[in-house]
Length: 293
Ligand code: AMP
Image (tube, rainbow, N blue to C red):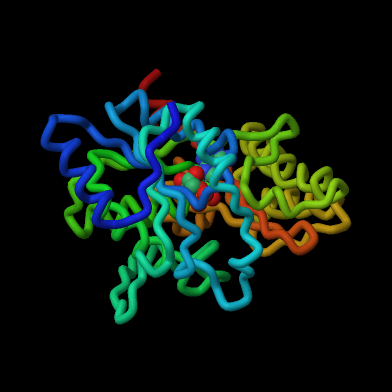
């Protein structure tokens, strides 16, 4: 079945109210469209957890910086409708900019500390734009739960923080990263890569795998891991590293030494395209290990 496409805020609110009144559990998957298997994995997860799946498709101007080309972001609603339907989406909410930010609009949601480092340091205002639009979408769609991808780990943490801090009654579910055959994390932005750049982009995942292997072999020095990752990435002639970081999995503070549960995260330009990726790793605490055996 084709999903119902709703463009107006008022209609979406009405539909959601009806669904809630008739006892349905609503799961929500916010996206910017140009769907790929990563998005569809979130829809399938949402399907497992609820009766009705609402996906939003909205390329949010508030989360793009002045030097980021929002006009170039890929869009294809007809294709998205087909793909969304194939994964079990019931409703697509696809509002216009004017519908979301009418004249006179002036409110924003700022989640402080966890928005600051990593991508936040290089994209000022980005997570404020994300938190604001997600808060608005939550108020319009009124879901019981929402599914986000771990591909954007910092985003998921910002949203989890917002939901706790603002007492929003919505469960946040974080789903694993879906990758291409060579390990490249799926992304609508992969569309920008030339064939040569696409081949080179495999170094992102390769460097994360290197980090994982080094840590598994006992490396605990953050700088040694980062240096090994830089070496892998520098094999790609069109690569330019924006950041490589090893950060606590809860508060995203950079680690001084490798311990506990953490993310290895990176943002790398391949040509003009900025790509991000991460892996979550945990290393056993030696003391616990010794005490329990
Ligand atoms: P976007 O359309 O890029 O804003 O992404 C919408 C949602 O899909 C976000 O929660 C992303 O984290 C998630 N997502 C994007 N790419 C992937 C991927 N490769 N695997 C899992 N989730 C993803």
